[in-house]
Image 1 (cartoon, each protein chain N blue to C red):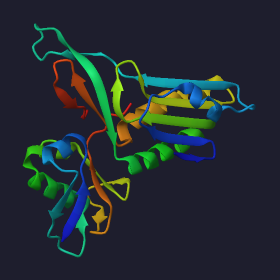
Image 2 (tube, rainbow over the protein chains, first blue to last red):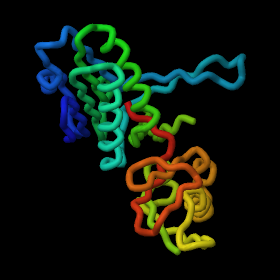
Image 3 (cartoon, helix red, strand yellow):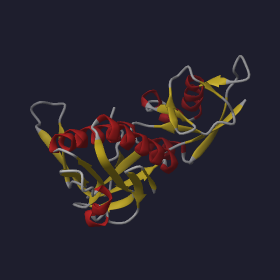
Length: 154
Length: 84
């Protein structure tokens, strides 16, 4: 875990419970706390290249996450620090789960606190978008038919 | 000059190993990040399609193709990420 100056980032292998991290964003001088949970989704709609075919729905059995762990901690820490400065946040917590994640469980949680609500509302999507784009973590879908597929959006 | 590079996700599966040693013949006593990526595409032709969308990380930071890389650097090829 990397934790300093109101910023906590961590990679975990077990189920994420928000209650375990609630105290890390507590600050009596703030009036807002915001959380985002990214949870593993069962179905993915894929548009067919043939317009007459409609969308295909792929059904996921589970997801597996892997990371370049040392670099991921560094990039997550830099991201959390940047968000804290840019949005005048008091505290930031980012926890990402690795390994197999069953459907419906959290793969990532992001929490933050700020003096007023707008900063939390604005910071959460900014952090999540940058996490998806730059933190060296990858997910592999295992579909119900047994096929596996790494997700490398380009 | 040889460089040891870590591989991840689909790139690692294509190569069949977690790391690869590539040989680069640079004009000086260093190489560029772009030359390293080109050498990996040549060594792992089954991953050549994915390489253009990958970034090289040097000592845990992303670098551009012209960045000078030394054999002692900690290198990793980072395919498009999909965390969250």
